[in-house]
Length: 231
Image 1 (cartoon, rainbow, N blue to C red):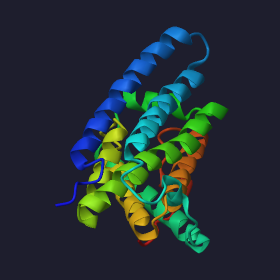
Image 2 (image 1 turned 90 degrees about the vertical axis):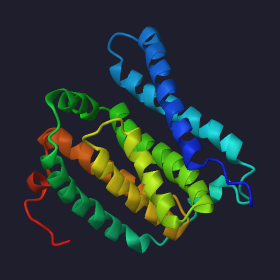
Image 3 (image 1 turned 60 degrees about the vertical axis):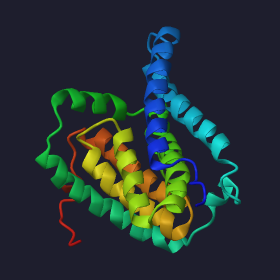
Image 4 (image 1 turned 45 degrees about the vertical axis):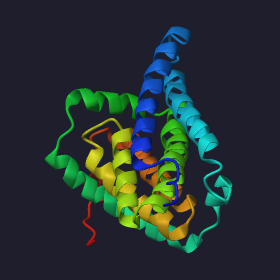
């Protein structure tokens, strides 16, 4: 029986746990090193350093697992599907509104989101650039790439979506994160490219970031576009 590709599902959970530990350690260090009015910088570094380091280290261990280089995962894809990806994001937004209405977010979480989504250059780079790129590299480019070699495609995509949901560390986001994570995993499986999932992640976060800044953290897609698409 061939040796399974690294990481397996179990190993991916250990990597996720390590990411949480590193995040706490980096946050503590940044709180001591950067104080005063540099909250945006602390948040940006507190996210990108742990996730960037974890991705880099895991890729070092994984580089001998596959014949093709990791950079081949950024292969071109048919740009004609971008309008359909945008339609998915908008439709997913309406579905998320319904899901979130069943599990309302408490006030303390709304405050956290208000701070995170308050407009700034670093805030935009964090939510709309760093998150789509780094999270897709980890969840689809590293985890799902190996899972597809070790398990059935359905099992691989489901588990990568579950880990993606857990990475958000927010139970009120878990179901929507799982749904969009499953779709992005399916895109990666079908196209063999990270770029379509990065585009979906980028569009979703940009719409949420901009509309939260305009309408507020309580925005819904019904406020943004007051019509109901048939999906």
